[in-house]
Image (cartoon, rainbow over all chains, first blue to last red):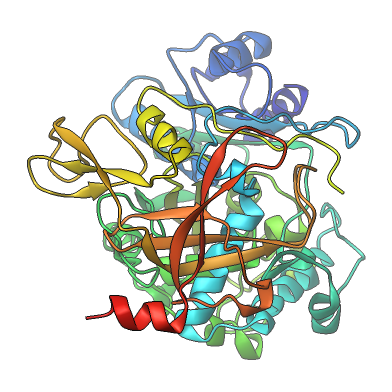
Length: 363
Length: 144
């Protein structure tokens, strides 16, 4: 909880607001922590915020963006005027064994638990269908690390890696290696959402929400139809709507922040975003395209893989900072439009389900 | 050796018939009595037509490997790595997690024809449906 409170205080202060001007609070459901109910209301109370709109939301890694979308909707619907969206997360200490939640009957008895092994199933299928390679995955890991080395706040600042490091890092769940997986991160994040009118005279230059989308479903094990993994139509349709709403095309995007809890997730996000055809994300990331200075700089703060697992808040915050021109050595020149995604997987309970959310921001 | 008991299923109201059949070494899935859709996991209603009328039917037990992973770093210390976990597609359509047994991890491939076998969870009184490769002669017999 402390991380969430600290992040909220920082965000309210950076916006040039006082807490009395905040009347909405949205929180990511802390799914693995003890306090399971009423999280948003309690967070508001501990911040001393009198709110007319709160919710605790759970769609995994897609939640951060979903909160921003909900906040904007609530403001438009006159439920409230200014919303803080936040999360806080503290992992169990390493010597405390992970408890086994009930309801994992169809995965756990076989020895599959947590996200990495399931995403390894997805990676294996992607490799089989499209010829995606471990080197493609490695390119994502190395690029994120290069960017993190330009971000003093990153968990892996000052710890560069090479493609050889990736290729020799041990298997976690083959075909995923240790460097295909993000590390655990204790932390918090917060974003303030308000109306364009209210934002105009605040301390920081406003960043506008210009497009969004969401999609939910279970490729791999969808119980009511069984599309191949290449059938990302449901995700890319959500992205298409976001672009339509923003009135721009992919070539207008200056910087992307793709959800990357695993390297394979990054590739799926590139496809879901419609930046390449389904199955072509492996070759897409080659040749420096996704690096700073490339055609489509991505995950410029290092992403979940190298900045830290901030449940997607890092991606939103970095998108905002890029559009404000605050990123120093990792600044994308004249960035005017950012595309950001979130991706949540609930993969131990059946059927394993994914949520996708996307956001287009502009200066 | 793994140093902790292997977890066992904890059947819900919906999944109880599935697990009871497993203990008789039978693989059963639900078939919608309105639209004929086979579904897994067990559920109250048909995700295709929303009918609540369903029958438990015996699956043929034939399947193909849809994907698989080899776990080297288990998140729970009940298994000795490396071991495989696969997703197989049943002949009836649904997909499910399982282990591929009777074959080395390096020999498993996507598209591999497999059939159900029941194995006891080590040290527990529970049968789990697992899958093992179909021999070439069996394949000839079963393919049209």
